[in-house]
Amino acid sequence: MNQQGELIQVNSDQDVVRVRQLVRTVAVAVKLSLVDQTKLVTAASELARNTLVYGGGGTVEVTTVDNGRRPGIRIVFADQGPGIVDLDLAFTDGYTTGSGLGLGLSGARRLVDEFDIVTAPGAGTSITVTKWCR
Amino acid sequence: MERVPVLKIGDILLVSIQIDMEDQTALQLQEDLADRIVATGCHGVIIDISALDIVDSFVGRTLASIASISRVLDAETVVVGMRPAVAITLVELGLQLPGIRTALNVELGMDLLARERAADDWEFDEGDAEDESEPETPAAAAP
Ligand SMILES: Nc1ncnc2c1ncn2[C@@H]1O[C@H](COP(=O)(O)OP(=O)(O)OP(=O)(O)O)[C@@H](O)[C@H]1O
Ligand SMILES: [Mg+2]
Image 1 (cartoon, helix red, strand yellow):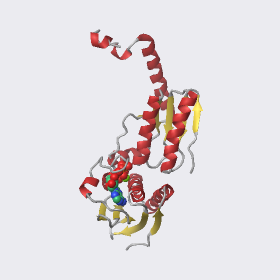
Image 2: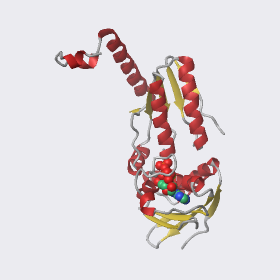
Image 3: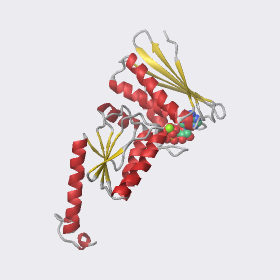
Image 4: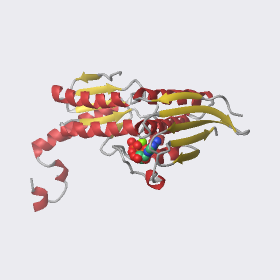
């Protein structure tokens, strides 16, 4: 059973802060452990910044989910930007086309339980991550 | 945009980050600190992150640049108060913080800076302190 999600438009630095705060609030509400809250908020911060910087802005939707055994949080980061041409490369630790450390995508994937990405050149990027309560 | 205050306490600049910083705020802090180091001649910077519930790659990178910039300006930076959950997450994220000194709290950070400063002064007075225990060789005696 999935709840109605909360949507944030990401068009500025401040919106990235809003994403972190919303994810934190929901993570506390579904009772993720402190370490898991920290991991999820950190992953969300990385992915929301990518949506802003590389996707040219977009949306972040945070939803609580339940797989029948345990509750969790699902977050979708979507943009209509240039998409990612070489996914393998983008997931390589240290690869960046910007001025970052190239840790955002690969690091975020390590910090969550499920990570799905749909992207194509010119067709935007949509990343869905899920973290389950233990 | 909010701004993070920089306090001068004796020979040390103390920054206590109490807000969830926008990226722009972090960059402003980096600039403010460089200015204050030059203006005050302080040799130590302590950045207290005990109020931060996350450190992502952007904040991590900013802390590392602050440490590098300070060093060029003859000041040592110590990051103090990192929460355990933040440390665990940073390691899993893959973020290394090269050149960043850390201590558990402000007091221990101050001790660390004081010890370093004392060691530096001693080196300055007595020659190359680190090579003191080594046997005299032409290489060790080089300037
Ligand atoms: N939403 C996106 N749209 C288009 N390209 C993206 C998107 N997200 C990531 N990328 C591409 O993937 C690369 C790697 O992203 P990643 O987040 O791992 O590193 P970074 O953002 O460059 O640096 P860091 O996140 O460490 O500051 C980016 O440099 C960019 O080229
Ligand atoms: Mg990134």
